[in-house]
Amino acid sequence: MTPQSDEDEVWRQIVASFNDTAERDSADQPWPDSENVPAEPARRVVKPSEEEDREDEPSGQDDDEPMGERDEEEDEGHYEPPPPPPLPKVDLPTKLAWVALFGGPAYLLVAAMASWHMEGWALFTAVAAFIGGFVALVVRMGDGPPNDSGWDDGAVL
Image (cartoon, one colour):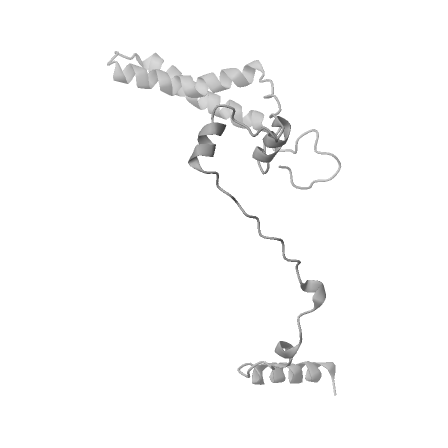
């Protein structure tokens, strides 16, 4: 008998038993003790009466609980992210490209809304500034990995 025929026989058995019900032997086995989770005692929350609330309002804290412990309880579960790194410095050509990219269409929009008479050279300059700014930003973007990427070419986040 070849290994291929053994594999075919196993597949035939799997297909033949597809609609059969599962054996109940596994359901009769007891739950392992190692899987049991210890039950935590239920926490009881007692709401103070309205009179006690009014007495506590001016002080803002209980006399028997120090201020430091109360702050820790209130801050529990609150995540405060670290401050973000500073923005990178932008060089002059990149600044000029951004100004050209947004300045050309902005000039055209303001001139059209104000009904200014626009000369042909002004229209050409605004459109050329937009296209030139876009091209400059794309060319300066670069294809390669960052300089500090290290020796591996893994994912860069």
